Image 1 (spheres, rainbow, N blue to C red):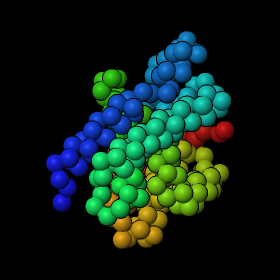
Image 2: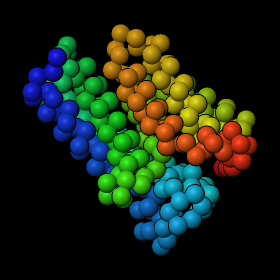
Image 3: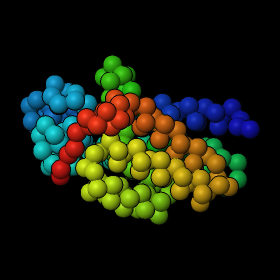
Length: 214
């Protein structure tokens, strides 16, 4: 069981990382450098895929990296606070990791439902990929390779995003069965990503989902 200080630490990490996630790279970059708002074009989604469709591959990649970077910030913050106050109950390495997991989840939630943007955010994919490489680098590398294969087979980013998230969760469950909090957080992030892709799932079923070529 967590004590009061540990519960407070979890809450602090979630809140701070959530607000880090609120900063939408697509909106900030499109307004600052392109003097436009990506939300007014395409799908209206403030994410890397829509940035690519509207402004080209360069800005799609930059947006992806921006969203990934903010996840690393949230993970680092969570890891440091977790190590400082001791969230886990076994050793400092697990404290560090668990704090990072919580921070990563907070960023994904903040990115998808940002209070600063009236809860209308992106789909959390870039953030989750950053979380993958922090929490389980080998699993992240395998997932990234899988994502490339799926992309070159279908060119449907939504399908790539959802299947990759599911694969990573499975890899975590298989390789870290003794550390349930890792695959639990991976499963929560995957659930968020799938929920954010509800419209895409409908279009995939109908055969009307668009493709994208980088």
